[in-house]
Image 1 (cartoon, helix red, strand yellow):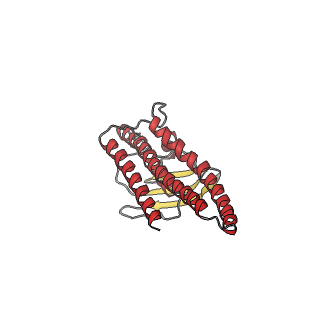
Image 2 (tube, rainbow, N blue to C red; image 1 turned 45 degrees about the vertical axis):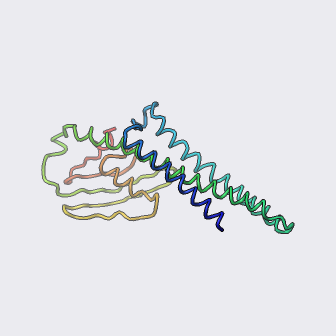
Image 3 (cartoon, rainbow, N blue to C red; image 1 turned 30 degrees about the vertical axis):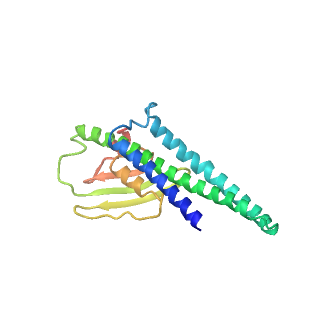
Length: 215
């Protein structure tokens, strides 16, 4: 038990130091992010590639190895030769857990890169002059989403979704992970260029054509 706790302690300590060094480099602007379409953005591309690789392969390979280890441990139990195999299984488990720390770190890097892209899109949009005939400069009265249908990764996320927001009204978007909460918010504020069906109205004026063609 003492050995296991010691391994976990050093594993978490190393992961913490890695996270701390990356954040410090970001704050000191030694690490910068460019547009995700920029081929020179090697850090962003590396984070995306490793995250996808870990999700697709490392998890499945570890599951296979762990199942195999369980079978071998059962055989070892019957042969009274447990200690060496137990050490191997423990090493495999902690290697997989440490990989989770790395994936978490790359998730942060990837999200920061996406945030930079979204921020640039917002700033560029704010510098544009709205079409007065489509977006009159008047007080906010309502925001409506009608018959919104959206799907990605071969899954349907929304179908005929409707929403109306009035002044000073608070809206709570609640749901399970990957159910489309963030995607819905990004579509409404023009941070998502996924193809979707439906219409968005600002003060009862259809602004969908502006949102769809902004990119």
